[in-house]
Length: 188
Image (cartoon, rainbow, N blue to C red; front, side):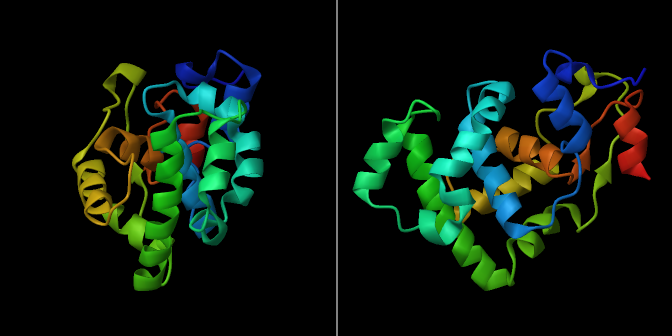
């Protein structure tokens, strides 16, 4: 029997996400953009809430194509606000659109979002060695720096806690507990 991080044990969807995605280094720009948006959507909620809606988010946000999202009309915003398949928060929906615009600016400046976002960990995953979930921080100096720079560039819903959750999800940090089978797999 595999030992896993305790946070994922409440559902099969969570277990699959933990085993296949969480903490795996991501370098594909569009996937990084999606992850940053969805972490922002999580603000004030549990990740499972967003994870349960992720497939629908991908559908209604055009597969997280930033070029399309950046040009959403007021009519499209209203349609999204009425969609029960996503978190219907006007500020969060507007943040997706603003962040798409800012993401495109960053891609233009750095040639890729990957080059920009991974600079906050010197382009290498940080392998932490926490023995319990209680020891895992909610933010670090790296997420502080990321949040500060993203905010300066005009991104929304990118506080340090959201940025740290994004870093965990995208594999910029390995916060699987040391007893979890994924810690060793991703740390190798």
